[in-house]
Image (cartoon, rainbow, N blue to C red; front, side, top):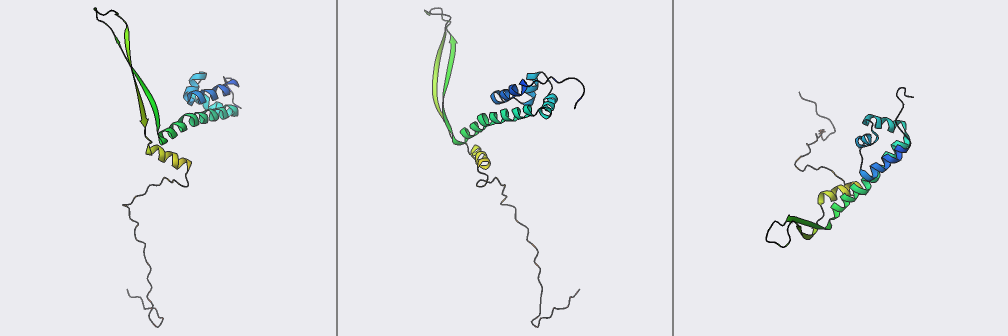
Amino acid sequence: MRTGRPTKYKKKYARMAEVACREGGFTDLKLARLFDVTKSTINLWKKDHIEFSDSLKKGKDDWDSAKVETSLLKRATGYKFTETTKKSFAVKDEDAVITGYELRTTKIVKKDIPPDTGACVVWLTNRMAKRWKNKQIDNNQETPPQPIKVEIIAEDGRRPEKTS
């Protein structure tokens, strides 16, 4: 049991940390800022309070699954999206009927992002590791020849004398 200053930890922090990690992708440093403690305090809380540690793991895993895995899969398979751009400018013509208003022009472009082979490799090597091994193969590197042991035996079965 630790001695010294009483902990600032409260049971509700476990739930707060889980939500912050799952919804906002919080790191331990960001959690420390949220709870107004140091990162080393967060590490102590993880050791001392199993519910806090479990909540962090669950929240971070949910974030990774929801955001990172989904994004990687989307990049590996390709996707389509619509991009909308707007330009604004002010009318400053004294002869214009309307002055001082901003006019906006909108441009809508449909874009098709093709699958990315790098993302495909990452996805397949991690999800189907047995079928998609990530090995570095150097075709320029030759295997050095292995020594061969040769034993000479005469026709009559005698071994010749060794000469030096």
